[in-house]
Image 1: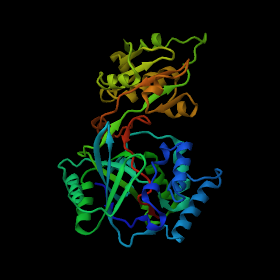
Image 2: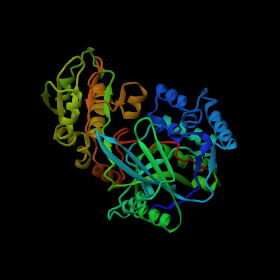
Image 3: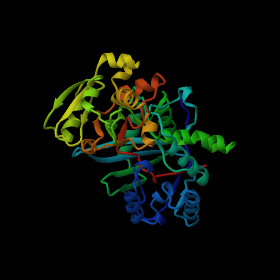
Length: 415
């Protein structure tokens, strides 16, 4: 079973200003415009640490210098005692109030094959190099890994909810409308929370790059004892606020052919049963594919108002060697029957070459310019994620999107 421990967090003090202006989303969902907006909120917004300015050779040094300056100025300070931190997000989900609760702790790093921590997605190489350089420069874990606990009997969720009737130690409300509350917990209650969270293997929901980076950092830092553990936040699978959203695929160009002509519909019909769905908006297409047969996706061609529901043919799945438990997962079908079969590429290569990109917006997938094509995918169920991880398998990159994201800036873990 995984080993969880309390830790002494490095946190913003009152000298930093309003915490609502200091938090930021995870680095990998922040574009250049978002980064500028976050920096304009406060001179102490944590985006200056997780996405530091400067040339490729200077930016990591700049992050380390900023961190040390904030500590010297008293903007950041370390909690005196190791603790467990219980965190609640309140937000609007499709216009309805919702909330999600997590436990922040330090998990002992183990290789994925040990079965204590289960990954479910493959990763791209570039982000890992970037995060490793940042970790080694700052000697600090700046953002948490988002994990899910099985919590079959609801013990973890029940213990978390017991705290909600007490006054939180930290409160903030960010401009995106999310309300943040955090409780600092120690003693027996903290021990019980960690015991409940660690009763089964933990699933990585978001942060595969950062987990693999932490393994590399621990090896690079050698006898640094703290580097053997990693900052994580853990959500009970029974939490109603644990929601998985889809990520859609955009292909910028058609596969190469000898004569330069490519017919998407004719080619796709060899591996998919195609059903034309006229007069659907992108949002309606996303809703339609969510209730379609497992492994399906919606194909949107440039310049056309209609779209096609594409369901994989059993003979195509068999020919590609896709087992039944993976054939029901649309990102797997896309990677094997489209990227692999038509382009001869894996997702990492296709993304690096500018052929493949991702979007959470179905409208973006439905407006890919000619000669490309958009693919609107359904969300992958949490049950399929657990099943894949439990068998030691990995889904393609960007198969899942857990929303809302866990923020950076609530707390850091020094090494």
